[in-house]
Amino acid sequence: MSYTLPVDVDERPVAIDGAGTLGQRLAAVYSAGGTDVRIFDVSAHQGEVATEYAVRHADDVKRKLGLDAARLGNVEPAGDLEAAVRGAWMVIEAVPERLELKREVFGELDRLADADAILASNSSSLPTRLLIENVGHPERVLNAHYQQPPELNAVELMSCGQTDPGIIDALMDRLPRYGLVPFHVRRESDGFIFNRIWAAIKRESLMVVEEGVARAEDVDGMWDIWVRAGIAPFALMDRVGLDVVLNIEEHYAEVRPGIPVGPRKLLSEYIDQGRLGVKSGRGFYDHPS
Image (cartoon, rainbow, N blue to C red):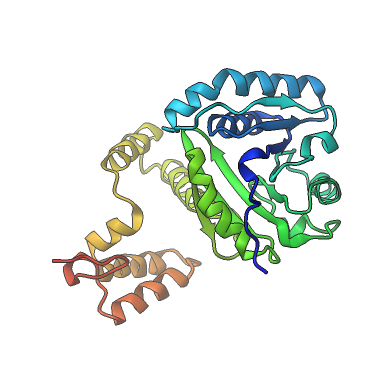
């Protein structure tokens, strides 16, 4: 039977294991959405600091994310991990990015958390497939990679390979009430979605400067103009024309050995279907005349 959120989810807290920069931001977000939060950190002092941060910023986060919760959730530090996760409907792991540490933590979370609790890793580089060695119930484990809320409020949800699909469906539906925008990573991907895209942008920016093509401030100046326009990558490709985009990609492939063939293959598939973008009425999106 596919997972569904517990009927008493609104009365249960979210637990956060790890009270660093992101842990305290997440505590503020969930508090702003009206959910009680418990924070645990091996440093009791850091747990107190994170709690103070969340309490101090929750009202501002609520305003920035346009939330209408009737109250702010209570935020409290927990003296130990067992106390933190008891009764939580979701436990978010936000400990340092060390594989063996995270494996140990997930073994503990699986043992201590309620049977219906979701176990979510905020790891930005380690897929949860690598973290479930000591987990008896991997079907409740997934990556939930947050950016930097409240300003960057995207969350990427990726299966550990054994995650109950109902958990991802439930979070896709639940997270927007906290002002978060969830995205389903549909297969395991190092870097998830955005970090892969950012890696290419960052690499090319560095190459442009290293090759003497432009100064760093020129790159940033052009970036500001492009971002200000607010045209997303696939919408822009549709506007340019997918046949034109393919021609450009083929030229790059000729002058830069090693460029992957996958993007050109995808473009060719769309072009073969007559999906050229705005000019044909269909591309990656439909464009009614």
